Image (cartoon, rainbow, N blue to C red; front, side):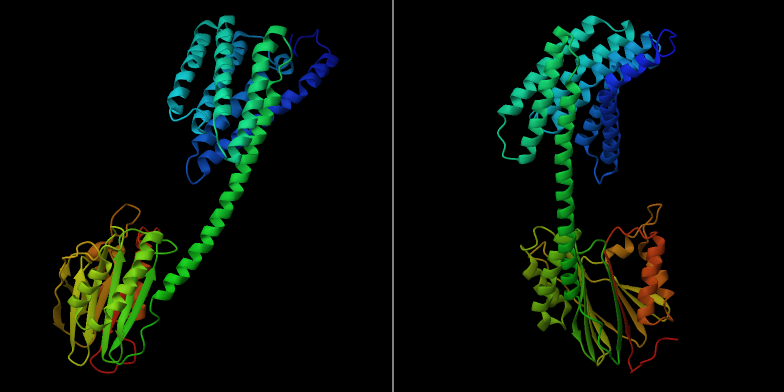
Length: 471
């Protein structure tokens, strides 16, 4: 009989509802927990397979619990489809459960293979139900496999030695759930007692919820601690970068440093900064984040140790390479160094596998290339110095490869030709304005999606004291 049957009275419907009230609530609760869990599994920073399988387990279990209640059966007219659906859900519930236990590590190293092997017979039962409808033999096979699997899982769980409190809590939940499940599948089936498995499942979900909440709070605390450490690291790294270049009659220098993350592997320094001389160093450590930032600090120390060679770029880079080799955990460094001498109106330049320095002179861009091998990779590396004359109003641009490799939404790199054009367009801008213009153009090009650290130095040279910006 169902609700549409005229022989049913309101008191019978109400009595059935009150009898099933707890299990209807639990079925809805399990389904809701599963839906929320599956959302978290996909929306987290990384797909959580364990949470995904647990979510499916809870949803299927909740739906099966509903379909097994007399009140739901009163609401739905009897049909083969309904009975087949109920049987299919019964066979489907263990499948995500096995994969959950595999992901949680309860099935050992071969957990995934065991889960697949255990899932196959249940999928066969589902196929058999779809072809032949519900059969008592199918339910018998289902109960047999479930009982055997639960007993094996209980024994394995109790034999495992672990000092992890979370594991012990979850293990208690599993043992309680298994005890109720075995009761239903053995004693309950023989004596036709009301099912109690849902109570055990409730306890099991409660233990999982406790552990999940505890780990979530712990992860949040770890994340907050990490953020504080990164803030400190960022401040320390910023402190090793030089302040603004001092006022000079001959050199107007603007620096821009935009790390991709809180800390970066790019670095620049002014090894000489007086009225007639300037020594500008720029470097780029391979990789990103904290490891690259630590090596950038080593680059700072290596450069400082070679300050006596600041007038000889090749000797300076060679000395830095000797200091860094064997101390960077197989990470390498590209670098470029230029020494400017206003007294002789010359520049000396050398580089280590770094993008060429650009010289803007009379509206034309010239690439200055004098490259040796990267730093920190080859102890035998040698470097040479190229010397060029300086002319008043020359503009130099030193930069890291993040400038050239900035990509737009279509994946196209900014490239050297665009950088040349952009540098030409800054001819009438002051050094600070030119640096800001280059960065804003790159930001617009890449739609604010930065995929590398960005560092640049713009240096204007004047043979006489010119304190006013370019016109």
